[in-house]
Image (cartoon, rainbow, N blue to C red; front, side):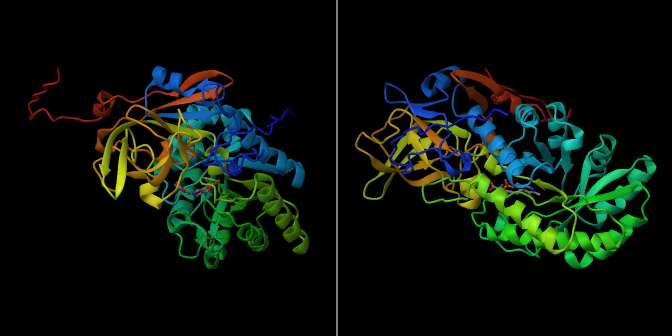
Length: 468
Ligand code: LLP
């Protein structure tokens, strides 16, 4: 198989202390095709960002194909190395779901995890093989369950409400439905409270104490077949130990399931590997993470005399975050003497809700002065939404700049577009794929008129439209 080689490119940027590109994209802040052109401007995949904004407008999401593919390949390569022949990396499409992403994931041989009918139809229309899709969710609708059953998609049973309906629907549709059971392993990890999922008080999955009832209920059903177990402990995790502990717990639970006559052939250890957003972030590499979960699973299987199952994992952020950047145009400057200078940009919390939701930090630079060579000063970068908390950077060092200059925010490929909103009726940006000097539209920019698409004015209200 062909793997992309990443040379030791030098980007002597002041926000990026680390000048060597790791071949584990989650260890880099910037896409691996980032460079500075002969005029001193930032460029990605040999595309001039100034030209892209002229062509597609701003704000704009850019995705670097090389970084994206190299993340997928890093997972595949590491799994082949540490757990040969019996693994499937499954992209968690909640991180960034689109026809393009589904198609790329399929072309790289990965599976895909979906949590709604919307993510499922995006995956299927993008070409993902139904046998490589797993369907999650702690409150699936009847329609979603039926859709998954009809499309022969593996379902992760999250709770008794799920299970009851699965049994009923698969009986009435007269099919055999493969399922995995999700449980909360009771593992604590260090990440933001909102993105922990494996602790005992989590809303996701069965508590371990309830599993006997679940295993026995599934055994009694003629139409539901239990093939595997699932657990996920959280997201943006830099520690390896919690993943280590998970494998042992999963194997023990699998042995319990076997006592009820189930044959567990798949263990899905979830995702969670963190990425580097700012210079102080130091996540493990994809290789180290896969080595940890693989060795832990092999060891747990040997210790408990359990036949090696297919190892599944569900990375989302570490596949797509680093390949994405967002470009904004600088607008209003407001200097508060002795305090701070605000610069407002033409986007903000509607295209990136992570700073206001999780107090997330990012790195950014001016497109025209990526190295801050031109008398740098500290600024506060505000979004354009009518909300004081809509601040992307509280205190960032940027070179001398003015209205109209472009700002590039790194690491926005995951959980930006997928969590975006139309707050203040602001249209979503376009998404552009970059590869070797070419740019391709992968999602159109919304227009303000698009936002009226689903509004309905009941007949008894008279329209007084005065748009000119
Ligand atoms: N599998 C399951 C069942 C999950 O719940 C998640 C993430 C993943 C896989 C992928 O985890 P990752 O590799 O991306 O860490 N919106 C938050 C992140 C929420 C993650 C929820 N579950 C954020 O912007 O940080």
